[in-house]
Length: 270
Image 1 (cartoon, helix red, strand yellow):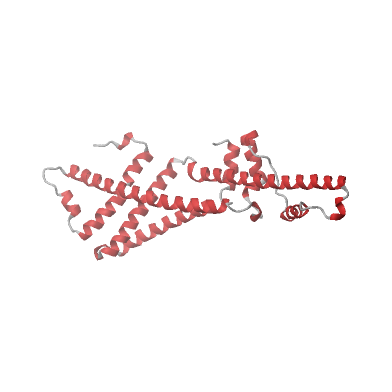
Image 2 (cartoon, rainbow, N blue to C red):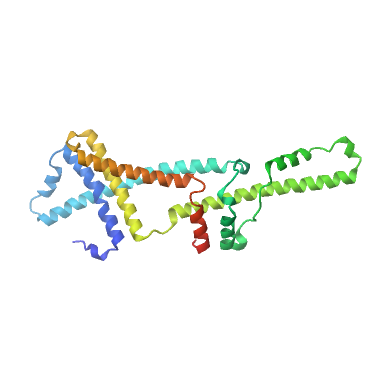
């Protein structure tokens, strides 16, 4: 018999939690094909404890398989949507952002303190109106200045220097934005969780899968349309959707992780 006392608590919960969606799936199957669970518990030549462990093993296999498939599908779809959103966001010209979290002085100071010489220069974008004026002035000089060669050369040097600075600032802003997005993903997905947070996250995921199975099963079999069961399943599924929506908001909202990033950078966490 498996001694769960030898496993870390969170690992034991992870294994046992997979039984939930498997039991829900078996329960739905039993409602459509009456006796499935009873047949397992009534196998001859096996003790009751052995039959109970066999039922748990079947539920675990079903639950683990179902959770893995759904996680792969949801992860794939979410990854594709996230990549598309990131591509759209990164294709935006810096001038399309009037304000942006990667321009926050506290965040840049924390980043520079953490990475030192590896950090980009702390440049400021040239006002779009000024950049447009530089472009206009970069056109051929008017005829009345053509005979003033020295003045024309000085103006050309100043205009070219201004354009170079504007282009460098735009590239610099894009560099800061990409670094910000990279740390944002680390904050959301790579930060170590406390054991209790890990346990809650896994239970929430498996309860949500089990709830979805029961709701689908209720649509297929009237035997499962029990008010309190549907109330619990619907409520937990709604909680799961709200949690998923909150995570999606954090991914899509530019400012959602600014404070967490500053804290992580100041703490020296990689």
